[in-house]
Image (cartoon, rainbow, N blue to C red; front, side, top):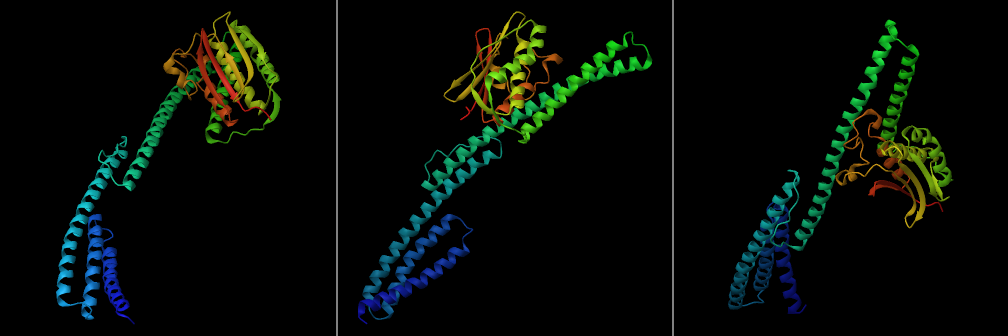
Length: 369
């Protein structure tokens, strides 16, 4: 074997022994600071070279003078390498601590703000991910607050709307029981009306619970919007006559859609009842259906005078009834929430916007193929 191969072999054995020791030290210090790990890595590189040199010198391939020169060079390299490793480690650790402090804002309900001083590419990528997560958490907290507010309003409205008819039913039943009712038939008719109203409210609550639970059963079938709108208009015609409101359905195209007829009739019924109740006498409620790039748009236009801009985003929230909806006929604020739930279950969307003199509710549904 020639001298070069022997020198390489001795150098490798000496460096390998140092590398094994360094690996053991790194394993023992894996839970320590990154500064220590970087210092160990730098030390392994320097001492591996020194160990290889010493092995070659012991094998008599290196003179004492050359060994002294190499040792001095290695010592200087060790000083510079360890100093550089310590400085780099302290800098990375400082950036990591700044990132940890910024991350604690998650627990305090705040937003994440990345450290101003640039960090390594990995820490910078982590900062971006944390910022994105912070934005998603902020949106989630906002939705949670909105849902909690909506839930409180719903409980308040339901409590109010249940208390009133229940108190009336109790009073009328006591009057009939005591025989002091002047007109028993009128009392019985009124009691039936209140019971039907309560039954409708309970039905709305049950429907909304199924929507929120994602268990709303749908039986899609191909039907024409013309027939769907015609049946809905016929159903609300008595209410429109009572309120003195004109119903217009001339702008309905016979477009096919793949929907659950029963549920979509409920959507149209809720929108029409809502529009009729808020349109003044001699006003007009118009229904139209037309094709659009997104599918089929079914709209209901009323003459309510418009909705305040700050309330437009809450119209479809559970329990919302507007600032002027303070009486039981306005319902429990479930109708429009049910509309949105049913439409979204059909992969559509429900929106509202103000127009001159009123507002326009639009339901966009996928067109039938």
